Length: 266
Length: 266
DNA sequence: CGGAGTGTTGACTGGACTCAATCGCGGTGG
DNA sequence: CCACCGCGATTGAGTCCAGTCAACACTCCG
Image 1 (spheres, rainbow over the protein chains, first blue to last red):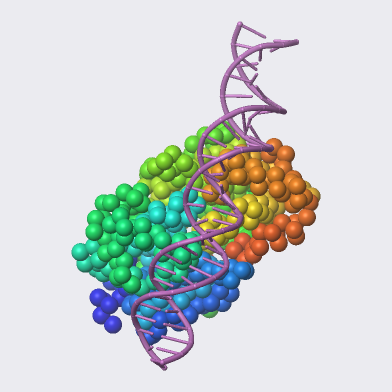
Image 2: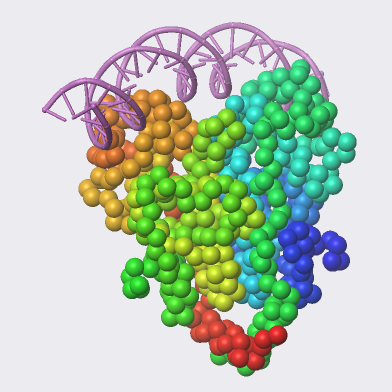
């Protein structure tokens, strides 16, 4: 695999400059691409969280099934995202994951991820940065679910998707593909499919958002952002100064670990 | 400070056995107890996340203020919890934190925490375990906010508080103190204060929960759990097998780092 | 061509919000 | 000591957003 194709390296590079060793470690996590098809289940609730995945192509979502059979969609995964981190420290998965579209994913396993934490402090904090950004998105969604009417929920959802898709180059002139059914959007936003439909209708009539099947067009971004009262702070990629260890320190740490490997062992 | 008084050691011990060195590192994070009073602000939205806190006594909560002046409470912190981790990898705080009652907190700073990640792989995964359990609680709350009516939201909230308080020994015979106003409970559950009151009234009339000022009594736990459709999986303290590195490996790693310190330096 | 899934619309219902009035308690100052 | 004030809790009346149920249209496929 080329360095370009590595989803993880692209992700981590948003936060810091990686050493060559770090890159090699990340590459080792993406050795097993798998082709998956739309609606295919990737993980189930209750499974052991043995595996994690990166998405190279396609969309996915994580969800919880409730007692009454309804479903809550927790997160939409796009190409470049890491799937399953949520359950990393649990002995059982708390959420299932399924594909939305056809796609390609790469699997790596729990011991591999664990060893990354022990081998590279920088990658450990990198994973933490990624995980806490996922949590921030979740928090933001929660606030809208708790307090906002349907129009603002949907506006916020669409604007967030717009920004995430733009970041990976999947937006052209305010237009993008949104391969979710209204039912699924409802499950993500805590709305009934019927009401999602009505809300889209209102957007169409006021010219805020035009939607045709899976094709979404946003004539005026500012209008949508205003309606959503969108505050993008939580999508910021900045990390605190000093968050990553300077390169030379990390190099020294590596050498010492190699040293250990040579000496140590039972 | 005695080992007993260390909030962090108590927390981490729920997940793994700590080495002596690990305990010393954790103790170093709790050197500065501060007395704080009810309603006092601990952090503000937009601040740099320089400091983190452990709560030794008292209750606190984190929140976001919305454009229209309303507030969403994100999490209730109890004695033993760690405050501020949410913002660890961000350059600005996304949420404020304020005390609910008088209390005592210990501050440690960003570089200290960062160095912990680099000095002990076990403590790094321990912090991750704690952070992901906070995230799991958040997710669970979100699901209830999105899909459940007021009675189930409140029932779930009370049952979760019950379990968390029981874990720290603050429950006696199904009774505990809940020092939140109905207004604050509403801000946590996405309900108006008026409706929180009506819901408590319904609980009182059906005998599910009795509440007098800040004193809450739950006559029959099963009834409350059933009403809440409570699934406690997300409060489980189990971690996957192999999650923490066996003691001897970690010891060797430490020695090698000491070695580095002796040899290294710019 | 028919069936399944998705989208669209209307009519009705209901849970939760708002506004508003009242009550009870604790603190504070005359 | 008591009147006053402020905050939280309580209750009622009216409104509205969003859910449910139901019918129908459209599109994609087999």
